[in-house]
Image 1 (cartoon, one colour):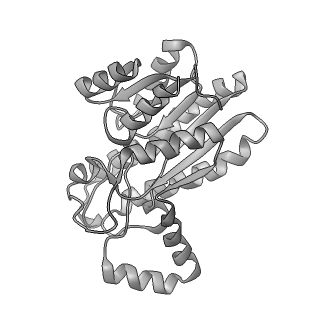
Image 2 (image 1 turned 180 degrees about the vertical axis):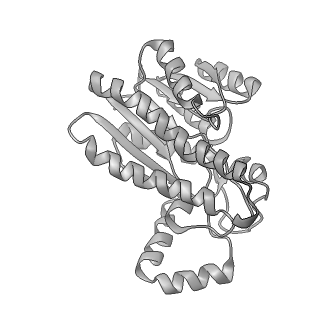
Length: 258
């Protein structure tokens, strides 16, 4: 897909990966609609990119559909939707409240599904479009202390894999970006900072470059960094060894969207 002149909605675009994606799409000539919860940060990114800010908390039921409708009203259509907004939660699953589970599932899984559900039919009608989803290595390997977050990312992963063959021959493509540890505010926000020496966090701009490249080149899946593909391969080929290593070393390499 040529990006010049395309209309792109980026959720979670006020900081981190989302802000970097919005900036790189704008540099490529796209017209960007920047979604975020924080008014000042969202407007700042929109100003830098020459885009339009839209505010909303996607953890609220119905907010994703409301956002999609508002985005469609801006330019009359959406060519690219980047479902990036999300958050984590760190700690034992037994200590999560029902409200915390509901919020995480709503924001990290149901909101992207509802957003795509609203924006996909107009893309099909126009005969062009891109659905860019942000996953996580956690969705491929599982992460101790991140059970619900990992579950939502695993579901998003399978959603992408299932939707892609449905859309063959329609000129609407689906991509999934799978990052590892990213240098954003995600870890502090989840309740526990990232304190490992290795692997070192990658810049959000690197993830954005891979995501935007996947859109431009119609790639189904990209990993950042690329060597992360080893972890799910080890899990698939030698699950017993993988589980022993996971039990020994605890928290595994994880990612964050947004």
